Image (cartoon, rainbow, N blue to C red; front, side):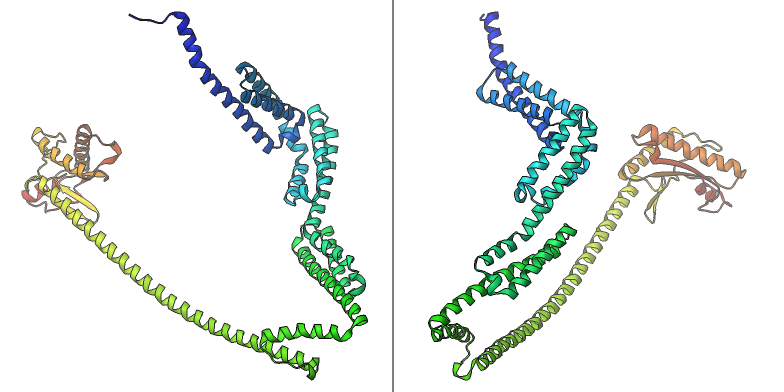
Length: 473
């Protein structure tokens, strides 16, 4: 027989345990990282910046040691330190959320306005102030924390407004600077003035209500176009001024060539000898003709679309009628199948009993089994042994309807006292119920027993044969 010596066995256990321990410690480091990410989303890095930073540094140290394959015990110590620091940070979460609530709202608005991108200096100053409030919270100085938080709110709001302005008005200001470089305020003074007025108004709207951005954006876009227009006008005016000083005829011919290119594109013959007014009228008439043609084409297209819509409506109507017919067919087919299944089931039930044992009837959605073969001794509710076989058949029928409820109704003939007959009918129905519950695995609330006494005869009580039919279950 071969065996391992104790020393070798211990070494084998250590070798097997090492990978498991390494996997566990990596999982612990990952879990700490996830906890820090969640804490950051809960603003703990602002509420308790010192403790959060210590926890983050401990996590980074643990991750580095994992990457370098350091001792598991050292890594675990770093993880435990990070968990401890994070727990300390969470102790300040409640009071921090209260004190810094307004600052968090302002910070969120600033982020939405892209303040870190468009108002970086103000944003950084606000971030430092909210962290200062967090450090005061960690010290337990709530008064100074509230003061710093209030100042942070102002800084965030300032950063938000600057960012909105830079975002909405930045393009217009860039166009203004480009127009200034070509002295558009002198060479295209009217257009420049209108653009400047719209830019000022857009800025004033933001100053009054920074969230009325749609109106401000519209004005800024109009100002952008007008500044660009002013720059083009200024460049053109300066070029014309230079051309006039050198060769005015060459300058005029060059601009007539631009007009000729427009006429060629429109397919319109023009003659500059007729004068610029006549040329302009012909070009306008050509444009108007094209617009009329386009309008006529659009009208024709609209008519075609309307016709298509009418045809689609007719198609939809036919599809709906077809779907309705299919649904009706499916419904009728399902009803027919259900009726056939009910009939097959009824036939199976009827075949269970002999004609002298029971009659099987239907009423609406109810199946009625009239047990004329089930007899009780006169004045008694005791089930006789000779009826056990008939009740066994009844059990088979009940199992056929596993989802149905069962009501056992006891009836008597009209002889004797009414109250006694009522009591006897209840006792007989209850006896059958108890028998079925004792011999079937069904919930007790599925089978009910009621007594009808002599109130619901099915035959005359004047003859023995009729009275026998009335004494039934």
